Length: 161
Image (cartoon, rainbow, N blue to C red; front, side):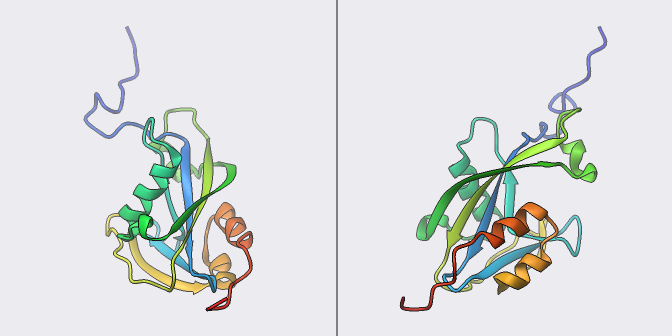
């Protein structure tokens, strides 16, 4: 019998599901948090991550925000935007998925915080973080779906409004 060994049988983590969340963290005045990827310096992004098997998407968003920033989403307003984007997985990251998987479905969330907050990045995932105006963030992110999500944020709200 010639079966392909599973990732688990080989002693490594199972394949990622091709379902993820993108969590845009921003202030009411549209200062946006971006993280620089450790595995690809110069690639900036919002919080993103794959769903664990059977995990509700909202819980994926909560988990990823906490893992990647140290922020507790329950203290702020985390919203499922009800939008999803299907995109082709970059070739350099396809090995993380089952053979033949080429596309991912990304679900958009937003987390509104009162002001730019200090975050604790996971060194295994990110090198640095910055808070920048939305327009600048849209230019910095490497992912077209991340840039599009930033462009769809509601207008900035003035403090006290």
